Length: 240
Ligand code: PGA
Image (tube, rainbow, N blue to C red):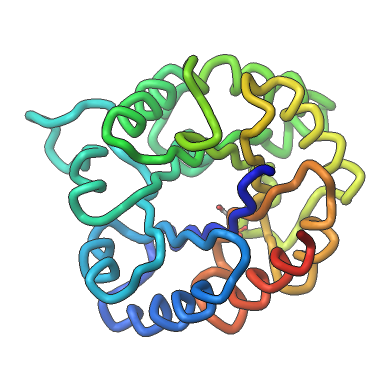
């Protein structure tokens, strides 16, 4: 049985005043038959952890454990703040912060060493999608950014087509099914969960989560409000 996970990615959104939303999501998650994880800005993890029992995550970590890396946050620091997960290799980090596969792989190792579960993101750009390069890109990202030693406890894969993030566009269900099956065949452990991410909403969650190789979602915009994230959690439960 693979883990079924509804993960929220708040990106650079959220103030202490928004912790009420974390409380609402946590209340819904308590009764849920799937795992629910909220990846918050690092500034909110400690406060959220004091408030709720919900599993929390960061959205990036340094490859190094500590030292002269001004502005960076290490995996042990996330763990210390109460995180159990960390998103790594998100396309916004790859594009806006120049993170290569090698950098992402080093961060995954750092997350594992700190006892965090890495949510490793992979996905093609719109140009790569149009050029028919999706599967080649994903194979290269898996080979380059997933170190040896991944298992169902320490790693979750998130397939996020870059052109689907925050755009309201998604691949067709057939495309998602084919892509997830391709990814599954390239993972070292058949027990690893693969989440779909990119414009997941209450309206499209049911058909995406019904696919055999989709084990949940990584949800950006729709995770910022309980009245859109909670219905997505319910769709994941219903699809089991
Ligand atoms: P979105 O973001 O749900 O707003 O498209 C997903 C993500 O970037 O993880």
